[in-house]
Length: 208
Image (cartoon, rainbow, N blue to C red; front, side, top):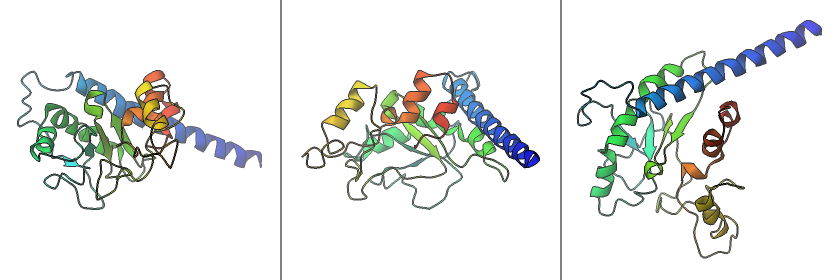
């Protein structure tokens, strides 16, 4: 019994250590990437990037319609309906989308046959931009992705804007005339925990 308990304990410890290492490695890579510490001095946004797929159903030009993908998908509630259609082209072709596409280089290296990681996601304050790998839908209606079918705000929250989105919508009162707000990474627990703490273990198992 003691040997079995020890073996289980050792496995659990190894599991958490490996998972924490993978997440920390991905986070460090992304931070260095965003600070231009990994790009060459003459990086050109117009050509130095990987393919990108949108998670916005209205973005018919860039929307990923498969069920699995080896590339991450991006989303920003600042560009909800692609109206006019050029707005979603603007986001797709922006420096932030193209630069973060390079994060897939590190992200994909973490997904292997012996990996403990099954899902990765990151969010930025700029445009409330987020990427996730593998492909995953947020809670949005296909008819109108700017009006989700369920609440995307984790409660309680320390973010004043997110608090308003929760208290003044159907999130807190199903009978409210104000619909659920679009997915915003800043209103999710994993984002707030990562922002407020240097202990990344806190955010690992948060619902994306």
